[in-house]
Length: 109
Image 1: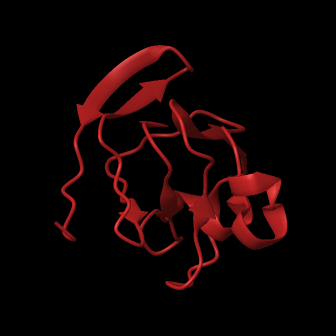
Image 2: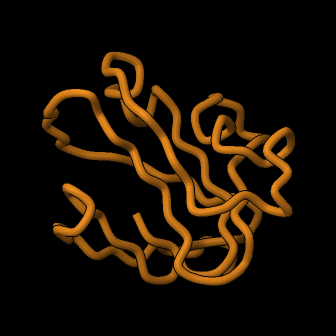
């Protein structure tokens, strides 16, 4: 998943049930001011609307979920917070195979 510019993103087990049932490793491109206690990747999945992962500025920014075994994904949901929204986003499989481009709607405009 690639994002351009600074991002505030949350995913939850409710919006992505695979997170509750499959073992995975999460990596992110950066964390705002390297402050993982306040803005780290753990906030992608905590289910709280007042927290989120925050990246540094610049591009590209990304979130990587690596599952221990092959999985099938029918849908996923991202929530951009605080008026920040990805501009040019992609879903990649196996790290280099782009399977979808998407352009989130910024509901704060």
